[in-house]
Image (cartoon, rainbow, N blue to C red; front, top):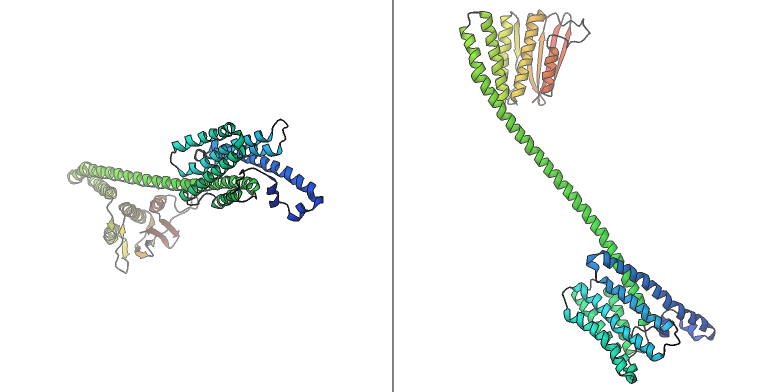
Length: 448
């Protein structure tokens, strides 16, 4: 078997680019010579640029440190190729062969380290054996100059086999994830270099190195894009988590505030009931003045109503209707005004919040007080209904109506603004309609 020096560019590689008929024609010899001169230089220039790019990437990305071996491999390939197309008169064939062969183990070292470093694991013996081999190769050639050609071929074959073994190990450990097609083509080129006089490695290997470098750059760019998408997803997820935490914290703060407020309301209600209520009740029973006793009784009722609103306990609407009916009919009857109360036609199962009950009670009291003091009415109709989740109240009297002499507004005076404000606090509304000769109509709407 005839061994030839692998990785050595030669004229046989031109067959990959030039048509066979062009090489066979005598008049095409200058064209072939031009291609044979320019093509290696062009490949070397591209390898230099690619090697610099990979070296820079190996410095930037900690996980890509092994790319420095590929960059060094490209640089050594350029240096070894220059031995063929750079003419030095003082450099004889023996020295050219010696230098060319001396670079082979360093090429092998870079390629093997590039293939094995990504598979993980420390190999101190390999880190020591490869540099030692790189020293032994030129030393053996210097010690046996008569056998230099044979030793060069033997070392070349051994180094090629080492590279093929490293390729196989790489493909097995990485499951073929890193450029299996390129590595396969490189292995085929090296095998053909060994067993045939045709030398495809001269052109195939530089092209494969360029393709490998380009694919690595594209992989890094793709990984960068994926990392940016992943970072964006993580940021969105973090923002969602922060929003959830803020919402939970806000809800907890509101609950805590509500608990504190509720506890304070109950304390104030207890103080009013125990202290102020007891004193007002004493005045009611011990005062010799009927007016003072009446005022104390009214104040005691207002205090009890306020305490009921502070306790925060919901009130059944049916019970509230009974309380309002009793108070309205009693007060209007004492003023010699006929009161007609119309309750809802159907069974009422709704409830009112404590504050809504208090505000509605005060609206009823204000409306009755206006009827007694200002309307001059003899008849009043109060209609209560529940419709579409709203509690509707209509209070209509047959009095003289409300005058609008000041500025044409009905909510001036007689507590109309207060009634509307209380309805608004319950997210409802209070409308007043009045006119001479047909009395006043108050329409109250409260959402249940």
